[in-house]
Length: 108
Image: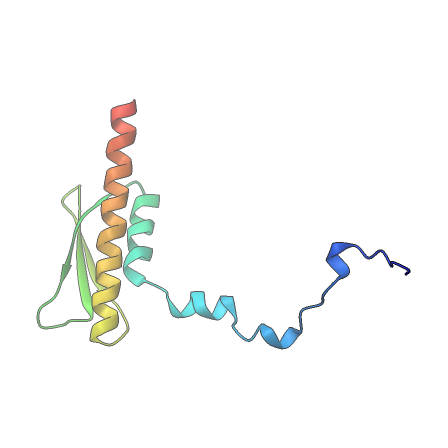
């Protein structure tokens, strides 16, 4: 019995047809405009205090900064379910930023 030695990385080739999902396309479809505005404000040295959804214009949001200024209207694209999801994601992201900022202040 003769044994042929093959390195483990050559044992099995994966067919290209298994990769039908484009990860770049997934990222492009899940863009959250509210998080982009929050990150932009933080990069400029401002911190967002609150996010408000407009009652009569559900695709427009306003943000209050800690300096007392207001950002908006921020137009967000999507149906009602997507708007709610993006709003909740932005609120969770904002709470995470606040928590991380408070922890860094306590450590200093």
